[in-house]
Image (tube, rainbow, N blue to C red):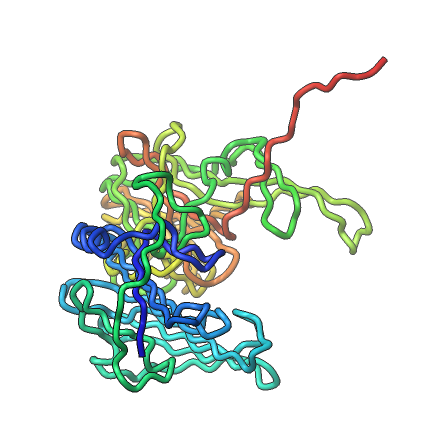
Length: 434
């Protein structure tokens, strides 16, 4: 079997065509420099490609998409280059198993198998059984080391990784595709419809959640208006190292996230939104105010950038698209604390809240109707801990705001997801006919 090989700067997901084709020599140069490029494998006479591979060594990433004869994607393989430069981890894969030629690409009724792997051998295999059976079945992948890793081929020596999927027994003969007309080099960026390496979750409009008058929506309520943040109190962090963690699990290993901040006392406040809705119980329009985020404020200067804080075991090279890192909670609770006094502060939290000791010195409730719940303090160091409620169990990202100079200006935890900004109202006066 003959397979044509074509190189390009990108792969357009909308048109399913390469964007800005390039020569093999240019692709080799980009490979050596670590820049992204794609390789397209086609069988002559077949409209859809056999497979498309995106290589971006600067992102530690190689992605592979496999297509069937109808142009539907059937497999998505995400590979990562980690500490060993000679091999790639099969980090994440998805297989769609269409039940017939009439089934649309990514149809919700399409059975799907997802495999999530990590370098230490941990992993999860999720089989989503659609149709009459329905539901999901989760197991350990149970793969051998050679099934989790692939040897890293040199440029131009990659095999057709989809050969087995396409039922090929003999190795194909690779030939260069007929040269397509290329755009002038350096003309414009790739369209937003082009495939790119996965990115972790982005911060969203965090500054705006603390800016009164901003209009947002949570997807359920069509319009919500940000009101003045509510100042709840302060937190003393004499060690200069802020802990942000779930106080209810794994605290024996220390706090999940730590962020260096200026030593001292910092403001704790709460972002809030106001909105109206029809209350069926009252049969009337009701206006309420609810919190969206809690913050430890270091400076009143708005953040120039926001970044997701990472724990000691978080490796950005392993993040898949929109993946989050953060602290876990089984009790819908997080906390800000002085990391230098973590152990005595957590011990007081356990005695006061979990063991419900009354009259405990160094522990009291925050009774102001906010998301903040309880405060403990360590007399020896002066460090403090304040817990806050989240709206559910799970993992919560910790967002660190920085100034133009890179200094920390605030640390934020969203208690119920990131609202979406609404466009500003047009206040331009209009002419009135008289």
